[in-house]
Image (tube, rainbow, N blue to C red):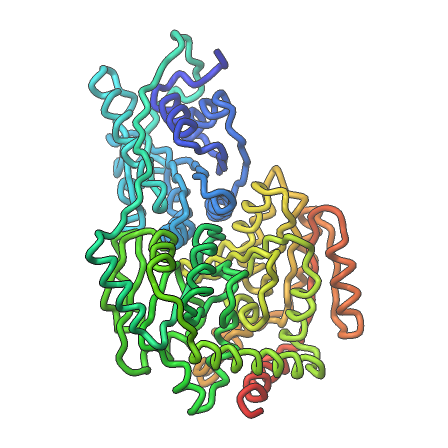
Length: 558
């Protein structure tokens, strides 16, 4: 038997985490969590040391994205636990299986002047789907069985999002276990799928067949081959209008895949053409504010939304049906039951989309050096089978303007759409895949999360591209912020920081592009490098927003 901690709770958690398919463990170093580190090492976990708790939690989140298997992050007691909150909220809204384990002081010391002691029970509030507060070092069988049950009761909710286990450890923290080999009872819950009854299903089939303008809007989701196959069968038999984004990861179904490129450039007559008489939505968050505003302002139509949680999403104020069943099953049933029929409306919208795509290409031929031009080059030269992470805020919006490459998988922290954690999440994803991973970040998001590189096992399949326009350029794109006094200081946060210093500090290869004539070859050269590297591309702060505005105007007026 491998050497392990003398503390029962540490041994219990290490065993049940492994039994519940959690194999990756990110450690934010400390003292109070030492027993759990010791026990997990004995269980053979893949372990990573990341001192910054915020970066550690986002790195674990990124690990869980690759195969949908849970990853765990642990910290010491006190304010360290509070630093996990941004990643917890992201995992909650993105439904990522993240196990958050916070070591704690004994309950008796809370509020009594002991160092690194805060109220950790319930610290993540409503953003946790399961929580267990363990009894301190149980002394009898009843207490041990209680800890075993509540820890696994929390873990059984992992398929829907984050869970929190708070475990108090009393000193001594570093003693070795000397007892007999232990067996811990494992509690499992087999996966189930909800289906509709025959009457309800038939009624929905008939409603779908009556619709002349059925629209399917898909938000953020991981690649889902079963769903894609079901939608392809339905599209062939009974065409519908698919609106998706890069983060939908639906790359093989015909439709409008660049929503903003379409919706933000419609004339009055074209806008009327796009309106559905049935809207079906699924997946997570939608990047496009434009399509949300368009659908809210459109006339009345029924809206069906797929959900597998307790949150009702009435995003467009038209929700009429909440479907609590697996989308791939539903669309497979639909494809088998509907009568084959052509849809001239869908063909008209597809023709409009093709014209917008051609105008997009025409504009880029003579596009000035800008953020838009840089994105065009980057997306064109991504390595084969890239896992692409986009940082918030401007970056993810630029990515939506370009056609999808079928070999690229797209990810971003759009659960809460915050600026934090983009680099750490990409880092974690790279640690859990052999595919090339590319993060396209802005200068502000990059600076905000540069502690992501403080990691004892940096992945060599990660490339980080930083588009540096000297501030939060998104605030020059959206309406309103520029009217605020001291706009450049408090909104745009203009800066002249030397980003190469970050690469130097962590010993990472660094390259820079600041001229248009070096852009194309520079990007290709960067992606051909071996190992982890950072590319900084300097773009004009004032001109880039105007180029984007002219782009939308060009697509609208031609």
